[in-house]
Image (cartoon, rainbow, N blue to C red; front, side, top):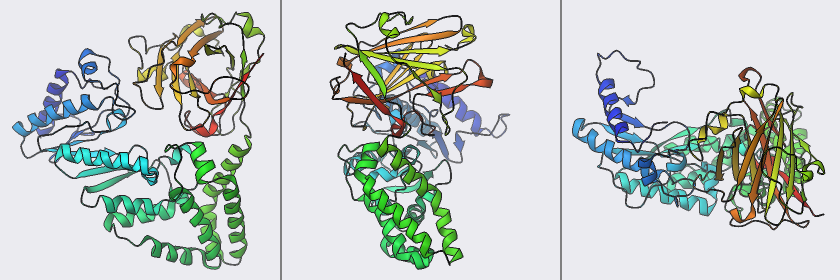
Amino acid sequence: MLCYGNSETLQTYLEEIELQLNPEAEIDRTGMIVNGKAITLSPQDMALSCQCEDCQKLWDENGGTYGTATPIMVDFVNKLAVQVKKRWPDMTVIFLPYKNYTYAPKGAKFPGNVEVQICGMPGLAQYKDPVINKAEQDNIDAWMAASGRKIQNWHYNCWPADRTKAAYQYPHTIKKHYQDNKDKTVGSFINGVKDHWPRQNFSLYTWLKVLWNPDFDVDSAYDEYCKRMFGPAEKTMKELISMQMDGWEKRTWSSHKFSPKSVYEESFPRKDVLKMQARFAKARKEAKDDPIVTEHLDYLAPPLEEFFAESMLISEGIGVQTLKSYQVPEDPKIDGKLDDKCWKDVTGFGFVIANKDGAKPRFPTELKSVWTRDGITFAFKMTEPDTGQLAAKYGAESRDGSNIWWDDNVEIFLDVTGERSEYYQFIINSKGSIFDSYVRDMSWSCKGIKAVSHIDKDFWSLEVFIPYSAFDKALEPGTANKWFGNFTRHRVIDRTDREYQRLNCNGSKSSSDQNAFGPIQFIEQ
């Protein structure tokens, strides 16, 4: 990651542009930042977290998840654009606001040669929520004001599809977005990471139509879609898909945040999912003598079946371990050694491989937890035959270094409200270095956290104390209240036999998938 606060970075960037504009320069011309009359500006695919003096002067502690680093990038883009205008007046800087520099700051103004391509971080499907949509629309308008130009969209159909199996449809949300912005945008890049058509087919079809015509008649197209695709099962499938649309688009989330609660209690409660499941079974029977319609239903079946299964798992809590945290008279000594009496008296919970099967790991991990009226402590014991090779390259020089995840580490995800609508994330490596954030907002720091590791001959262990006072709002610990969370171990000591483990896993690749968060039960004794 470049340091965008350092003046030498600007000079280096200008030298690179000059080099790439020279047709005789002997350089690798793959991955160029100069393309025709465009100069592209996009940092690496991670949040900015530089701790140097130059960057920290511009860091916005109150910028939230999508704005802490915006002043750093705006300052750099502005300086670059000024130089480009002087040296290459016919060229345009294309800037991609992303991660924690997505939201535009008030009063920003570029010199007229910057075009902004905004990443819609929640994913366009979430624009159905009025609060989320307003924040995204305000951001579009702010970047337009800064650049004096129409913007491009970088939209995600893979978000939040990567965090839920829910088979939602959102064609009216798509149409509204492009109608609201038909005089504000010059086009969209749609970012998907795999084949989303079986799950989102009518929405994606609508999206491609609306890009050409924002007034595209969604409802008439929907009528024809159901008639042509489902024949004898037309009425039944129309009822089913309408429930997919209405559950997503017409029900406002009370938290205005994506979460398992929002999806499976508000958009698609269990009783509705059961009705959808029954309709799909009925459509199968209605189409049994029509091989083409049966083939269409076969195409739609896998994501629907995953949706129905996830609904059952979440509603019934199948396959999720409840982590029991036991009350003790005083907090254990945080030294990583796990030799306090309290650890001998409480139940440990084993991790599984973070894959669809949840197999037992070759290098077991055990987690225990205790609590007092001041805070909660987690103890990890991790089998490791060669602890002298533990990876611990990152984190020592500063708090919140993103690369700490590539060390041998553990992750802690805590939803302290019990609402399953937000979480705090902690990554701690084998040297006790800490990364912490509130969802994706790295400006949040856990005041009072203590984390110490201990490295033994054939295992390493870690104790982490987290005070309740670190959280703005948290359920008071006790028998009546439950937090939710998940815990991971990332083993990187041996790249040929790397294990990624979790306490709970539903097959998702994402550790932050709240569908796999299990209850944390406070046992009073």
